[in-house]
Image (cartoon, rainbow, N blue to C red):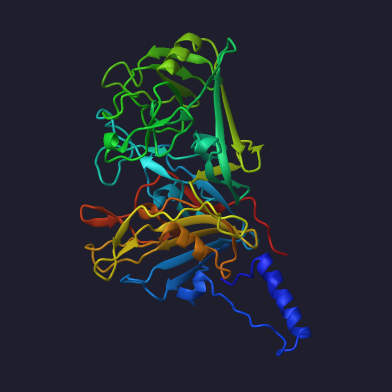
Length: 491
């Protein structure tokens, strides 16, 4: 893919050319051109994948291995609505909380006329613990025969439907890509969720589609407290709040949670209180306990309805104010804290979330850390390399959506990992190269989740091992380019 320089760089190049015409070579000062990270160590493949209309996939191959045994692969997918009616969207697949591979999610997304043509895995998530009696759930984790649900870490929206609240982020929320009319806009997002009873008494709604009393991966509000790691080992980042109300939508495709999901966390042991709402917000049932009156009971959200679960003072509020026959209004506001504006949750809006923006207005944000969740041995004994494969979504100088993956290659045997990525800041430095022409980019879930598809072909190696074989990880949501009505046909 040949991409013009970013505007500031192009202007600088034009000015330099103009000066060269009016300044003699002898009088010209010495100039030093610094090669980009891409130019220093990557070579663009001569093979460009144009097999899918509106989608261009280019590949860059690492030249100097830096203690690796095989070159890494950087793949850039540009979505061009001027050459075909394609636009970016997101999907949760068969349902919220359901663990599926990207291939499974894309196969079930859209319709035969608006099918996905390319995609990557989406936002951050945590695999949820299992209830022993949830034996009839429709999907299973690849490493286990028992059902596993997923808990989003940040805002997740498909077609204007909110599936989870934001991370708190000190009151500023955390980063996310708002995908609207086929194009992503990257900003910081903060949710404001409320319930208002028929008597006019409001209360804070803590989250959507997750176990009350126990948030994982990030705090959802100022009341969530981090549990010491020595208590939750091997789980990291478990936050508790003994007084919560959580809403479950009919997109949630598992039985709603019961108490005692996590023996290490006591705040979710409260049997609590449960309320069922119909499509108008009318309370059709209100009962003590959560998830059913007996160990064998399975409570699902009714089609078109919702369920509220409360623990602590949240349960008390539901007992006192959500009585059968009355109505409870659910308020959902989503704020762009960067521009201090509200984002209307209409059917044109999809959102995937992350903690880190890699590029903002063509530069690496000063606050971007240099993290790596997993390291492995390099080719030289005693050295380590970052094994976090990387995924990003963003826009380029043409205003077109771009999907990016940085991964290793398939290894010759199952004895060695296929995963081989980069430290977060180094990934941003590569994406900041002029040759790619990227303006904004958001880091998505990486590591074993990293998956890139065009058409029906997967271009990234699996890195999760199950029964001795590598498989692609099941994820919470995906970002994909689909046939859309937002195409801008070229004349």
